[in-house]
Amino acid sequence: LKFKGANGDAFSEGARIEAAISGTPGNDDLPTSLTFYTTPDGSETPAVNARIEPNGDFGVRKLKGISGVASDLHVSGAGAAGDLKINNGDGRDVLVYNGSSTLIMKVDADVARVGITEDTPECALHITGGNSGLSSLRGGTKILLEDSDENGIFLRSTASKEQHVYFANSSENANAGMQFQGNANRLNLLANAVTIASLHGGNFGVGATSPVHKFQVQDGDAAIVTNSADANAKSLIFT
Image (tube, rainbow, N blue to C red; front, side, top):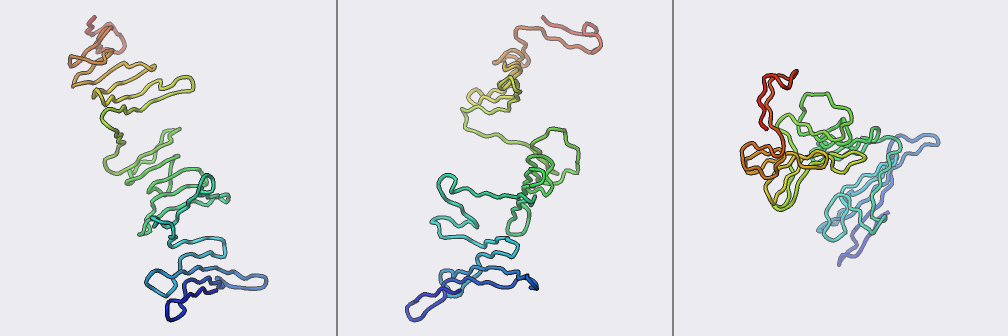
């Protein structure tokens, strides 16, 4: 099925839909693909832009036509009309590759896990920069960052904002954690929702949120115990 239009002195082909046998036909068997062609600007030769395979697979080369959008696939709309739903009822994975056929992301449908540059995600989210050579993983882990080189998590915000990592259970909100107060340049350690230690200006305080000494204990005892079996033996206690 060809679509033609006048270009000034002739009719040129602007688009085409082509059905073709794709596979080996037989009795009661006719595998067919449907290919969509469109003609790019500056040309009069249609090029393949999308194809539906006999098994229902749909391949898109480039979908354009939305102002300012040049992505391979763009879904636009209001509310649920703009959603993109991928239903892998048969357990098939969702794979994202870059131009060099390198795996960028995998959604493993069988185990409900996501891998970023990781083909076999070991937990809910597995981000790999390089193979560490390790295989052990603590039970209950939901996020794994793996690399063969330096590795870490970077939190960044404006200077006056708080950054934190909190731990909570079903009965407490932010029961424990670590908190950085950007406006005071202070790092706090929390337990039972209370600041128990602070690092500020090169000073470390236990029970003191603004320590003025290199090591400061506020409202309590400081003890150095060298014998863990006997708290009173070989110890130095300040009260």
